Length: 138
Image (cartoon, rainbow, N blue to C red; front, side):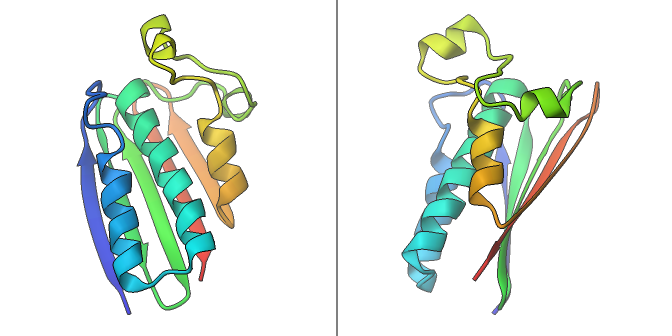
């Protein structure tokens, strides 16, 4: 089994934030992915999607299923992250007050992604963008 889909994520549109992760969750349900894995993938895709909406100038989430793994890749065009170790600290956020007032931007996105993925990597270039790869073993 090999499935690979790419979903665009627009910057700044909180009205559709979460749509991509919901589509991915429905796809996993149809495929019979075990619920514990589906939950972890859903948490990570939602966090990645929210980060793309809040912090980037747009990007995409790629969802791939192989016989052994589920791989989620988040790629964006954006300001990049100047200090990844600081960004990985729970509670640290660069979200605007407007975003925080909507209940987002608590600084838990990247730590939640790392905690829920079996493998996690992040690369970011200031002024270019950020790439995240998360792997979940089936």
